[in-house]
Amino acid sequence: MKMRQEFRQFLGALVRKSRAYLNEVAIVGPSDPYARRFAHFGNGAALMAPQGVIYNESYLSIGDNTLVGPNVAITAGISGDQKMLSPTVVTIGKKCIIGRGSHIIGHWSIVLGDEIQTGPYVYITDQNHGYEDPDQAVGWQTPSEGAVSIGSGSWLGANVVILPGTTLGKNTVVAAGAVVRGEFPDHVVLGGVPAKVLRHYNAAYGWRSGSAS
Image (cartoon, rainbow, N blue to C red; front, side):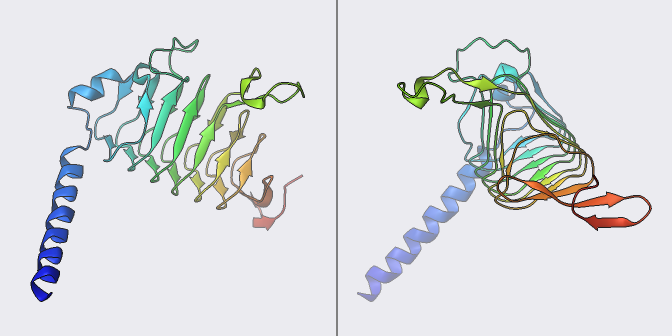
């Protein structure tokens, strides 16, 4: 029994060590051939392993020194051979950190500025299914699209959902679990479902509760 336990521990350690090694060598950097499939893959950028679902790379742009965490999905369209209407569908700026398990699902235009950080499992999309026809399954109805823009310096907490048509100003904080849709100014804290302004910055008085309006 003791020998079996020692063997299990030895084998477990070997598996963990092997997995860590494989994940390290599977990191994608700008010098890797795979990086050339992207519209842009910046210097110092990296896709950590294991990578999530990534396709239509020629419509994806990743800025310098941006770190994309493990299991992150970044896609343009609904298949790897779909021709898109925009030359670049998803743009991620410089010095960003995209948290583990996040999804950035583009069809028209998703632009993340520079130095944006997200927690794990953030979902960003520029397309929603329609539901106007009560006699047709929602998944088969014509979707609606709206460009998404997230201002530089922003922080999105864990499990945030960014819906189509959303524009966030620079240095925006979005509280964990918020569902965001609409246009918001610079220097605000958002939270809730649906998200609203919880705090805003006033140059004369500093941070204040609620919206500036």
